Image (cartoon, rainbow, N blue to C red; front, top):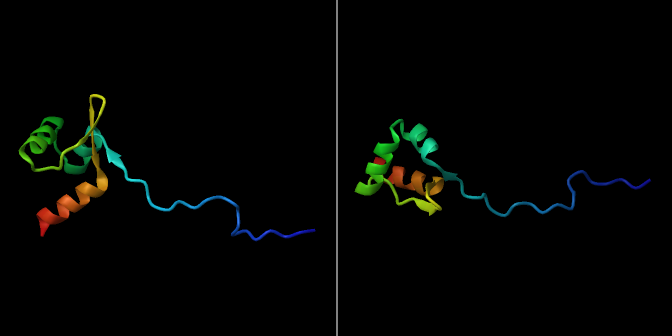
Length: 73
């Protein structure tokens, strides 16, 4: 009987983490503010511009992390 190495599955390993997009509800949870505040901050440049998919706005989580880090220090 042939043994198979458990580390070899024949599946491809992901090359990079897929960027996560945050909708308005997750943005509200992240910053603890209302949807109107998120809209105002975006309009005033206090948040990066969202990606528009249809009528909905989504923010890139990595971009938000960088933006918050720059503002903090």
